[in-house]
Length: 243
Picture 1: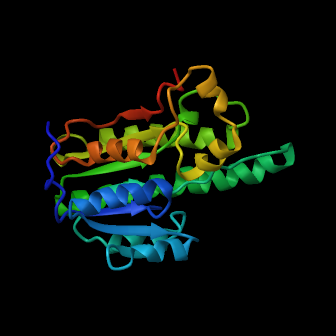
Picture 2: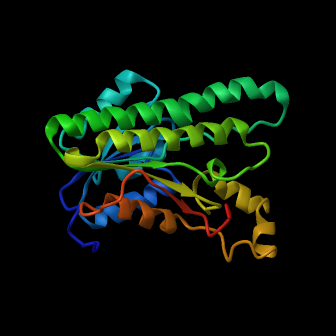
């Protein structure tokens, strides 16, 4: 399989939560290839407006069924869906655990999984072969103390993605995969890197450098390639942290 410069030209792709640090780099990459993008955002409208004129913008809460319908309606010939939406669900004391877990369930699992399944149904109905990529985290693939509220929902997301991949394989040819970033200097981990939280990974020679948004973007682009033969997989883009 060779990635070709024009294989995504004209294809409709939704980047859900795609105006943040990781999503914006993927969006820029796909726009270079003349893909037709729809970007969703929830709260950061000013950041999202920077994409006006280059992509269709939809304000949407993925946990809302009506918002998911509006988002999918914005791309009637949908080929690709990438779901970046997430919440770090950080907990500093025991009393915060229950509300954090409920919020994490809605944002990190329920909304993304329902959107992925609804997108797949539309692709099937339209007989459009396509690709769905969900974004997880290294914390779903190794044990990180203090990450219960966040990591458990992301691990469940990965399992649900593999089930959907099995349901969509064969003649339907809708591929479903997951990209699981490590300590990446964009998105949720950016502030943690700046605080020095992960410096030990460099100092102890666990990784050679922190991840970049471009590392994740290349992995997403790989899974979006129309000629890709891979489905139901989780790709850890973490420099070896989870080893």
